[in-house]
Image (cartoon, rainbow, N blue to C red; front, side):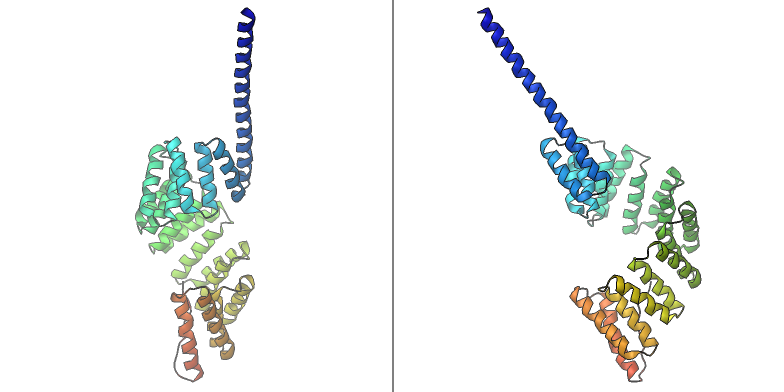
Length: 333
């Protein structure tokens, strides 16, 4: 009997030891999977990170895995799909302020700014010094036209991180929307003092100068944007607006040519080039550009104000060619 008892104890010990080894192995392989997912996440390969976090969550769901998968979805433009991940992260870790803030960002980008504010408020309730939440809440308030409140959020960002160039640049944008152009320029100056390569600050300051009727200063800033982002269609398009004020028609044609070389389907560039060519009395070439703009807008199913601009210019150009009065239209800032 003693032999059997001993044998039974030995079997139980062996079974327990096998279970423990299995648990350790599970933990080991789950940790490896987390490391693999994190590696793609840190390298900003978010599509692959989502795949790896899917594998990890299937085996071992956790708040951090849901959170990082949610962030990866935001980074790949999957705002609506990311919300469920942040819900699950919050369910597992109700005090995770980052999950509330990122869920707020996702909601703000899916047309739910009021719900987004609730998430940002909750994140700041948990952590009153959470800079990202103040920053995101400021932009949510901008979308709701609560600009004075938005400025207060960016004031807080600057208070918490006085050397963060984006804080001043974002507050500059709010002040531009409030037509406080001189104050906006001061903020952009500070942003560029902190980061001389912040292209958005040059662009915002350029718009402020343009609204203060200082197009030459605006032109310098938009030139700086293009130096930093030579392949940015938006940068060239913004500079075209300044060149229109300065009546630099050849300059408009040149910038439109560059835009079209970068993106042949950018319809507005054809309209703007047609505007310049018509004013240079190159009517036939202008007509082709307006027609091309119209065709591209139709292909892209964009029949908003820009499409109407092209249609109007086609009609006006006919009047101009017939020596009737007519003034071509160009998209303004």
